[in-house]
Image (cartoon, rainbow, N blue to C red):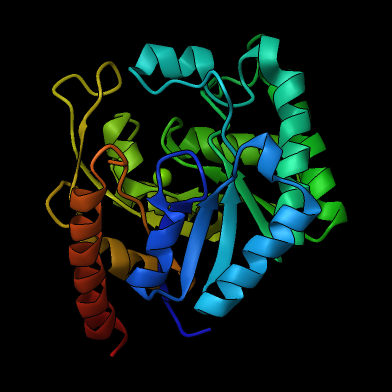
Length: 281
Ligand code: MG
């Protein structure tokens, strides 16, 4: 694969990505896929999606898990509902992630990813060890089938994430770096964070956002790529500096307005194409 192939976050039947039938129109070499609903994750479903992607000439570079009952309504709701952190749903969501890893394997994809949820910042607090253990179980299942597990960034500071990765202690645990999330959640300046965690980064999102007036308490705003506070040229130059040459996956979370989503993704493709030739030559 060429350096920095451009991609888009896509979805079969659910989630926040572009719709399945839009993938071919965009003519991009890669996608990340939001895992389909449970009734579309069989081996034959995966093999059918795989042959459709082959026909379109598209490689799926990561499958993202997500769960019923998750809500990104506001930051306190994310703490209560997202990922493998809430204890009451942890075991059933782990089982679901194992299924999603299998689906991903059948799809021919070596990477599974998720928002793990709000990991406590202090390893000595109640509940931290359990989140480490569930992550180890998921990593080990993925490792048995030569897959990586990527943690989406945003809910942790760079230091919190480094500490957590060290506590889990699994070679196949990596990072999907999303610079906009660091701004939206108010967890830190993304370029600085990228330099700190760069050695763990194995996939990235290209997304932009603006800081909230109360970072960490209320959301910042997601905006079209290049119009926010990330600084796309600096972001790509920093990715280059840390040696990241994998896919640049555009994520634009406005599925309620598919026409606007498609047009903004088109602009994002143009921006990334220009910056890529400027930086890589
Ligand atoms: Mg993201």
